Image 1 (cartoon, rainbow over the protein chains, first blue to last red):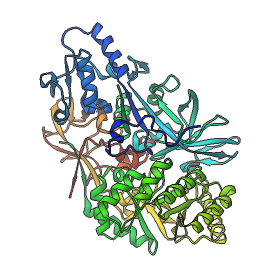
Image 2 (tube, rainbow over the protein chains, first blue to last red; image 1 turned 90 degrees about the vertical axis):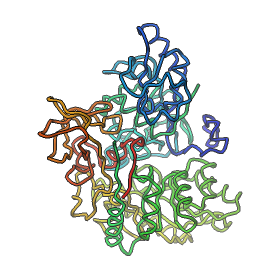
Image 3 (cartoon, rainbow over the protein chains, first blue to last red; image 1 turned 180 degrees about the horizontal axis):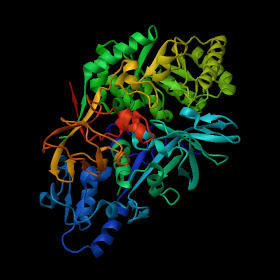
Amino acid sequence: MGDPDSLVGVTASALDGAPARRLSAPVARISHAALRQNVASLLATAPGDTIADLRRDALGHGVADVAATVLDAGIDAVLIDPEAAVHLRVDPHRIRTNGLPSLGAHELLGLPRHGVLAGTAVMSLRGRVVSTKRLLAGEGVSYGYTYRAPADTRIALVTGGYAQGIARALGNRVVVSIAGTPHPIIGRVAMDVCVVDIGDADVADADEVVYFGDDVTPLSAWEHATGLVADELVTMIGLRAEREQIR
Amino acid sequence: MNDFQVDLDRFAANLAVIAARIAPAAHMLVVKDDAYAHGLEPIVMRAWSEGVRWFGAFDVATGQAVRAALGPDARIFVWLVAGSDDAAAAVAAGLDIGVGDAHLLEHVADVAADANVLARVHLKVDSGLHRNGVRPEQWRDVIARVAELEKRGVVQAVGIWSHIGEASDADDDDARQIFETAVDQARTAGLAPEVLHLAASAASFERPEFRYDMARIGAYAYGIRPAGGPAEDSLEVEPIGALTTSVLRVDPSGVTIDLGSLDGLPSSLAGRMRVHASTGQPTVLAIGPTTSMLEPWPGAAAGDPIVVFGGAGAPTATDLAESIGSIGEEIVLRVSPLIRRSYR
C-alpha cells in the first residue's frame, strides 16, 4: 500500500520552500552513479582530450548537475549551449560553447543506439498511480476507445502524458513496470495521463510506475514504438517532466 | 535565433469566435502544460482582459500560478490532485477541485475541515473514457457521501462533469446519457450543482447538446484543429503560435537550418514536411539533433528566416502531425522550452 503523503523522493529544495514538485507530473530521475560509471568506461578507452557533449541541457538531464559530475570524474571539458554558460559553476576553462565534442552523448548518458544500449542508462522516468478502478469486458479506454477490454480487469490512472514527452504513439505499444512487473499502457496516451492494465496485481494509489529505465522497460522499445530516437525522447522528457538528481 | 512567436491578437480573435459559437455556455480556457507550451502568464492575462473567467489548470501548481497572475476573482479548475498535500494546496489557493475518486473526496474533505474552509468540488462521473471518474455503479454512494459532507459544511458540489471519448457520435451519445443520469441522481440526492460541463473543443463546436453550462476548450483557443477533422477556416480559428528559425549555411547539397530533433521537431517528419521560406516551401530532407537539412533553392542565404509551422505560408502543427499519425497538440507541446517565446 503506497502512502500518498510520503516525502520519499522529494528533493531538499522542495522542503526549503522552493516551489513544490508537481505531484501530478512524472519524474525524470538522473542517476549520477550511472553517469560516473559511464565516464570511467569512456576514460579507459578515449584517447587525448575528452570533451563531452552536454548541449540542450545535457539532453534534458540537467547541464549544471551533469557538468559538475563528469568534470569531477575526469572529463576534460564540456560542450554546452551558449545560453547555458551563465548557469554553470565550474572552471570556465573547461567549458566550450562551439566546436565539436570528442564524446557523444549516447555513451555518456547510456542511451540505446540502433537498439543497442551504450553504457548504463542515466535517466529513468517514473510516474505514480493516481487511482485504480475496475474495467469490465467490452469497455473502452481513453480517446477514440482504441482499446477495449477483452475481459474484466483492473486499471490504474498514471501521471504522465505526451506533454511530458511520453509520446502519444506509445499507447497500446509498450509496458511500464510496477514493483518490477510489466503492465501494458492501454488506450491512447493523453496529454498528462495514461491508463495501465494492472489485472489482479496489488497496486495502490501513489505507487511508483517506471516508464523506462529498469530491466523491464528498455528505452529501445520506445524508439521502436514511436519512430523517434533515444536522444530526442529523453531530451523532451527531461525538459518537461519534473527532474530529480540522485547523487 | 529560434523563436516560438505567439500572436495574442489572434488568440483574442479565437476567444471571440469560441464565445460566440458556444453561447450562452461559458468558456473554460484550458491552460495546462504552460498553456499548451504558449506561455502561461501572457495567455491568462490576455484571456482575462478578453472576458474569460474560468481557467482549466489541470494541476495544482499551474492553478496556483493562474491565481497569482489573475487574483481572487478568477475561477480556476484543477482535476488531477495527488493526495492530501496537493489537496491542501488546492484548497488554500481557492481552486475548484475536480473529484473523480472516493479516496480523493475524503482527502479534500479532511484538508478543508482542517483549514476551516468550504472546498468547491466538481464531481466527475466516468461516462466511458475510463480514466478519472466515478464508475456509474458507485456514483450513488459517492453523491450520498458528498451530501453528508455538504451538511457538515466542508465541501460544496458546485459542478458535475465528465470527459467524452469521441470515438463516434453514438458512443458520445451513450456517454451523455450516463452523464444526464448522474446529474439527475445527484439532484435527487439533494445536491445543487451550478455548472455542468461535458464537452471539450470538438464537441462544443459540433454538438450543441453537449455544451451545458460550460465547455473546456484549449486546442481551438490556440488554433489547433483536430487531426482528420474540420479545417481551421470552417472552425474560424487560426493557429496563434509559429515556430521560426533561420538558415545557418548553404551548400550545394542542401540548406542547413538551426533547428533539430532536440529542439522538438520529431525526426520522423524528415522527408514528410515542408517549411516556409521567403521564396517557396522547401522539403525537409533530414532532421538531425541540432540542425536540419532542407532541399536547396535559388538565392538561399545564411540568415534567411524560416517558418517551420504555424505561420502564414507554413504548414500547421496539425498538418505535420497528420503525416506521422499524431495530433497537433503533440507537435506544439514538443517545442522545446529552451526556445524563446515572443509575443505580439
